[in-house]
Image (tube, rainbow, N blue to C red):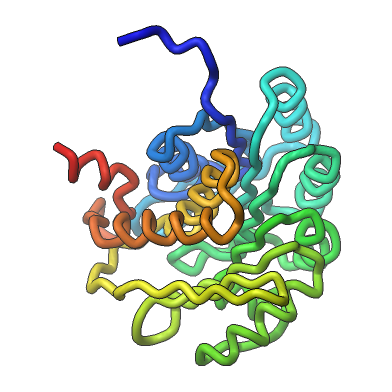
Length: 269
């Protein structure tokens, strides 16, 4: 095999650690590897977490987050950035400031709670997400619980997803990807920039091992953008990847297992 002389596209995740490996920066880096990009990380928080839930969480100091970000971006550079768990208003505002000065597309996953219902964002940080973070996003990827947290809109059907998208777009992201996985029927998402609408549908698999879906989807979108895809193509490809990962999700521990980030590799074996 010839020696590689050029670096692959680089994607940075700014997120928390999931010690169980199913979500957070662990899921992000696995997803990036699966998409052929070089993943890098800025750690914002450490969680004690397993298939049963989050037993503890400790955010890092603002100085540590800023230093990690500058270390990576100033030397290595990035073609896309993805954000996940930011924990506090101070971290949200720090990261938003850093992103605003970075010339790369940004995918914001406004993480509020874990798959198990554990809070991952301080209530007082919601306003900072609305006013500071979403405005620097190329794509914002809230699920319906996060939509309700940020906008007060409760979505119960597909028509409600349009209203949710309007509310999210009002905070300033270029595109809103409203994830409708909590609705019944097919797994449907709505991607819109306020003009064009893209409805993405996939079968709903009878598999409860879905830990890490939000992190995985956002990281797959960021990877696609780093590879030069436009937003609709990056989201469509990410949706297909996550659907396969959900279908292949596996039991781990005594609770909710993770999606399978390496499902395409295993299919090829």
